[in-house]
Image (cartoon, rainbow, N blue to C red):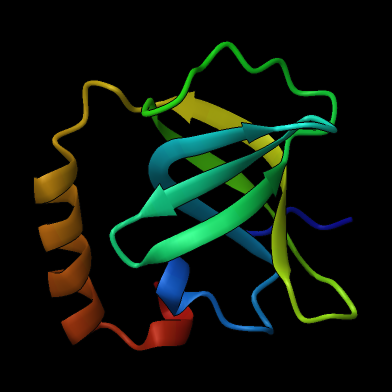
Length: 110
């Protein structure tokens, strides 16, 4: 498989034809079956951790890079490939920069 660029998104900006994306947000909930709920200021999404080691806890800020899957019921789930610790990130500034970037760049290219 050809390596793909992970498109940076907020949860509300995820579109159905996204394939490989990255989302930065807070761990809202730890679920069974090695899954979590990730939350940013635009929404929530389920993350399937698969075999990835997950040393984080509720309210930790992380960046998830993975493949977008959409269930038959229309639920969007990210199959995590990489998880990064973002606890030292100023999330407020990150969101401001994302909004500025979104204003000046076509949505399918950021």
